[in-house]
Image 1 (tube, rainbow, N blue to C red):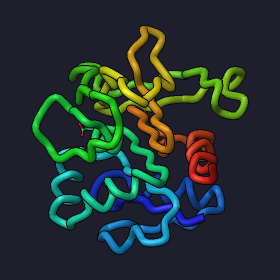
Image 2 (cartoon, helix red, strand yellow):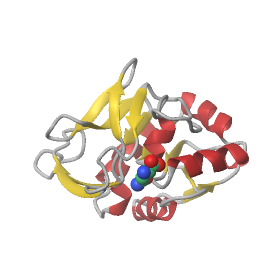
Image 3 (cartoon, protein in one colour):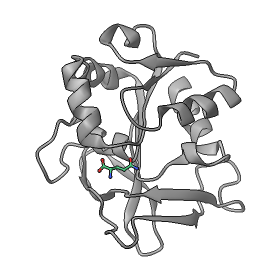
Image 4 (cartoon, rainbow, N blue to C red):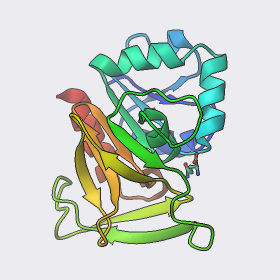
Amino acid sequence: MNIGVLSLQGDFIEHYQVLQALGVTPRMVRLPKDLEGLQGLILPGGESTTIGKLATAFDLMEPIRQFGKSHAIWGTCAGAILLSKDAERDQPLLNLMDITVARNAFGRQVDSFEVDLPASFLQDGLEMPFHAVFIRAPIIRSVTGEAEILLTLPDGQIIAAQQGNLLATSFHPELTDDYRFHQYFLELVRS
Ligand code: GLN
């Protein structure tokens, strides 16, 4: 399987490591030609304005947008912001998913936290909740159109959404040694 990881800024190495552990050799995506022949793409966490500006400078925004119309893309944290159509401020966005996000939504004092989330769509996901790591994370404020809510916090705040072959998570499965979210994405790529 040919899976690319946008590798301009952020924690792309951690995604490579999980993919390698799952037997997939990841491809570093830095230029439009790197998308050729890929079946899926991961947009890592990091700083969404920086990633968006770099992707604009490398002429990647439109090619990724086109890629996402017929291929699987998964954005974690900053990557989820990039996938959105609205981040409540002016920054380069892919505008692929019908979601609105609020950046750094958990405030300064609780910038980072971890929580165990039951997730029925993951393998054994009810008996073995997924340990989700949030780092200056966005909240998915609204999910409209064809996008669907995938996961919420116990208080109802949306932290994962899916729209067909597009997946957005506020948190960082690449920072845990639980590979079930990556497996879920690889199934999406195959489907
Ligand atoms: N706070 C970052 C942003 O708004 C996202 C943080 C992350 O990816 N861990 O772009």
